Length: 107
Figure (cartoon, rainbow, N blue to C red):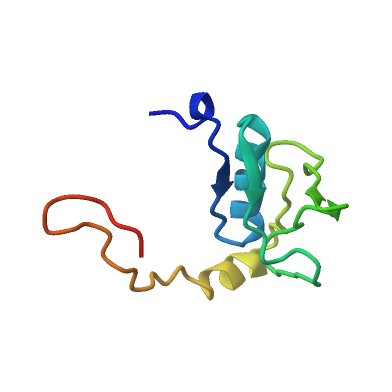
């Protein structure tokens, strides 16, 4: 089922890093019924030493990043490989969303 024909708005989840934010923003710009993008980095100084930038927010709207691809940059010096490797993804324990009857639940 699609949300658009039923006039349902979408709010995209964002994993909050510059790479995930750029991908989420591109998806939000391509889907007509997206009303919000989760943006915990907005309205504060958000820095990262692995890749950058976060989108600029003007009047409540995230502007698309400029540049090729997703618009993010990474310093590809040899030290950055060690830096990126020092910050591995650590999965967190998420609530179980499947009910005993096979249905999907909110948490």
